[in-house]
Image (cartoon, rainbow, N blue to C red; front, side, top):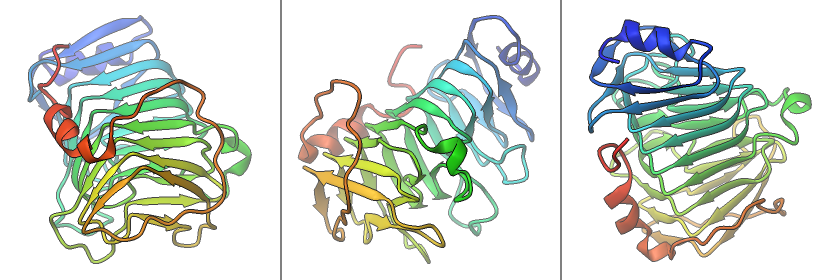
Length: 277
């Protein structure tokens, strides 16, 4: 696809497609993505500015190697990648950002997962320069729909200068956060790394924290506390990693990298231009 019109038409079609995005398209409303789509950026700079991708009531979707930036809260769902009532989603090797000069209401999220989303993997992305980076579960009042779902994996991502929500989790259990690099180089009026709320279960494993004053919140805002198990994390000039309760078993086999090596590994291989789509 070499234009926004082409991308929009093909992404919402009913066919199973691999869609290659060649260029940067400026837009102000969501690009809707339906089931059985792989959307792949060409090179290191292809993607969207001003609007994001919306994956709603869909399954079997791959988003790889795209740059998505500066999605205003008023542009569609207001997220770089918005996933709602969807399953089997893979978000991989993308670069997602806005800026930190505006207040937290000017932009919404970079990756927001809501309304019974299930079986999502978020891997090898760079999320940066944003106030509220990733939300799992949108409301404290949505337990009936979300309990038993929102099973999400975040691995080998960079969260750089994310003020909050890396991620903020409601109800999901397990949410597996492993081998990610969290770093802050800017000052925020209010900041934390991961928040577990509303009886969520987060397994925080073999991550690298650098200059993160409050890596974990147990509860956030008006939301009740969730559960968090932490093991084998590595912290440099960062606060204490809080823990509470227990977390459901992770339903797959994996071998995490050593936490002390994560900064080098992830900064070397995460983001766009690192794979051939």
